Length: 332
Image 1 (cartoon, helix red, strand yellow):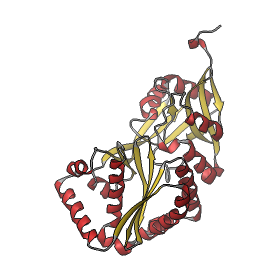
Image 2: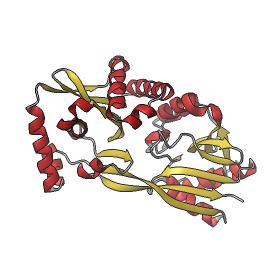
Image 3: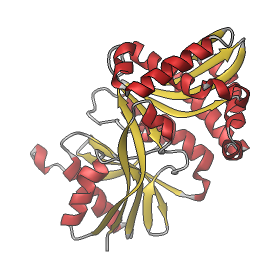
Image 4: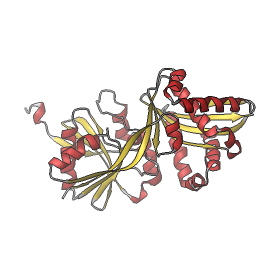
C-alpha cells in the first residue's frame, strides 16, 4: 500500500455545485482569501458573461484531498482567470497553505499536456499565490515570466473605534470631514440605513442603480441592461450568503447617496457607489463612504478595501496603495 507521499496527484474538472461544496466544507484547509473567485461570484459572472469563453474550473487533488482550485478560462492556447477586469478587481488561485509548490507543478503539467502555451493572469496582488508561488515556480521550470504593474488598489487597516480612525488621518482631512459633517446636518433631516436582507436588497438595488447613473455620465454608460442584470444577480446571491451591504444616506427622506459593499472574512470591500448630483455640494458621496467605514469599525471588521483605481478620495480617507500586476507566463 503506498504511503501518503506516494499517493497520486490528479486534476479533476469541477462544477459550480462541487465548488460550493468545497467552499462550505470546514474540514478542508483551502484558503478562500480572494473575494473575486468565491463560488457565488464566479457563478454569477459565468452566467452573465461567460458565453464567449470555455470554462476550465479544475481542482488539484492529492489522493482524495483537494489541495487547490484553478478558476480558469480557455481561449485558443491561452488560459486566464475566470472573470473580467471591468468587474473583478483582483483574482487568484485557491490553495491549501503549504501546498502551493505541488499545486502549481501539477497544474502546469496538466495545462502543458492540454496544449496550453501561455497564462495571461490579470489583476493579481503582490501577496497573491500567483505572485508569491506561481511566478517563481514557472521561472524554475524554464518558462518565460513577465509580471508588470497594471493598476493600483487601496486598503485601510481599521482601528477599533471611530475616533481612532479620525486620528489616523492627516489633520487637514480630519478637519474637512468634521466640517462636511456639520454642514450636512444643517441641510435637513439626515438619516443613514443599511440594507442587508434579500427581500430589501431586491428592492433597493434599483435605488442604487438610480444614484449610480445620476452620479457620472461614464457610470450611466457603464450600467447597461446586461451589467445591471449582473449586479442584481450578484446582490441577491451575496445577500443570501450574508455577504452584502447596501449603505444609503437620505436627506429629508430622499435617497442622496449609496455605497455597495461586500462583507467577508473580517474585510469590507467598497465595490461601487453613486449619488444624486443635486446634493453634490454637500459631499454626500464621500460622507456615505465614511458611514460605511464607521459601520465596518463598529462591527469589528479589520480591513476596509477601497479596491481598484486611484481616485483621490481613497488617499483622503486614509487608503494605502497596493499595486496590482499582470502576470504572463509562456509555457513553451
